[in-house]
Amino acid sequence: MTWLRLLLVGTVLILSCQGIKVDVDIMDNDGNIKIERYHNYQDMENVLNQLDSQSFVKKYKIGRTVADRQISAIKISGGFDALKKRPTLRPMVKYIANMHGDESVGREMLIALASYLVENYQKDERVTKLIDTTEIHLVPSLNPDGFEEVKRENGHNKDLNRNFPTWKEIGLDVEKLKEGREPETNAAIHMILDNPFVLSINFHDGAVVANYPWDDTRVKASEKSEYFLSNGVNDRTPDNDVFEDMAKLYAAKHTDMHLGQASCGTFRDGVTNGVEWYAVNGGMQDFNYLFSNCMEITLELSCVKKPEENRLQGEWKKNLEPMLSYLEYVHRAVHGIVKDSNGDPVANAKVIVEKNGKIVKATKSGEYWKLLMPGSYKIKAVGNGRESEWTDIEIVDGPGPRVDLQLTKDGENIDNIEEAESENGKVEADGLKVEIIPGFCLQFQIWQLPTWCKQSPIARSKKAQVAVPARQPVYFNWHFPIFNN
Ligand SMILES: [Zn+2]
Image (cartoon, rainbow, N blue to C red; front, side):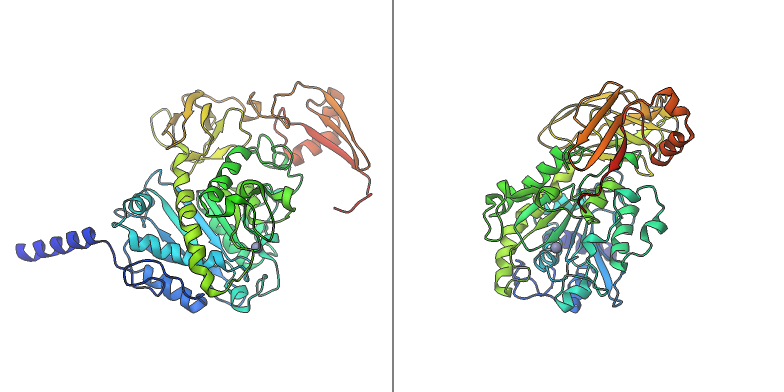
């Protein structure tokens, strides 16, 4: 049956040379995206089902809504068996839209982006490279119930972007984290905690701006999390330079976001820190960064939350390039495998960058990614009671280097990492500092507890509760209730 085999191989070759034709109602006959109307729940499902027929695409559900609608996601990843098992060191990026049901532009952008990527795989060099090197997850609607009713909240009239756990809940197990929350929120919590995403966007409408964490005020993650050596400064995260860069990238590539002159609000360079704009407690972008390695920004695409349908094609033109560029941004990360002295991967090791306040947790296969701005750094890994040497790395304005880290020597206590960044960016000397914040509270900040204090049972129980790493300040606050905030 040699002729049959030749025919089969020939067919496969012809298919792979011609690219894949996607027959969805969001495209004209030449394969160009043409958005003429909003896709209701069933329309959206139909498009995603069609895309799912391709060998490099998988539609899956992340959960169900209050009204029992399926919350669908689509995974796009090219190469042999890549959908079954993510190739080692292939980074994961996710885009989630429409968590506020009446904010509809991002939802259409993601339906269109999924179609565009699938249509152009093996046709367009840039798209093909992206899909063959990146695992892309798109959730066009986290709140399809809200979309159908054209309202912000979900079926229980809850605002999903105020419904996520905050820094105060770090350390609770997943079941406790989920307790009393909305099904849509819990679907996202699982998606975030179960997968090693590196980069993410949360799409909204009501302004035109790229917003980066913190969204919540006075986040003291280091009091709760062993992965935070510092909390950042002035409502900025320890990775503020990278977050700002991510936001600026999207804004700069967008036709008019970078101008920051939309009628509904002006923003310098089209970006803002969350708290500086307005504080959000229980938002999704803070949750990503607090509880996982994933770095998420929140994008507001349009002043009008559900513009006329004839505006959607224009929105697509504005957002295609920034959506592609942001997906590509993940490849700037320094990345590699943490290995033991035999060269075997070590699961869940900690990867530390000198003078950076956020530790990254490696995957079960030892993989890690860390986004950094161009410059010189030292990096090391700690795991299984052992650690690697500090390794010098150079980050350039382009693809990040691969740096494998081998745990070759006995580890020191991770709490004693000397280079831990302090609140003001410098290593503080041990000592006692008394701060008086007018009208609000009296705050004692102690870097090293005196002996008499360490021996007191109250101090011991307080220290155990907050699990403060060494050289992190311990705060004792006496708040006088002048304002509620
Ligand atoms: Zn919103």
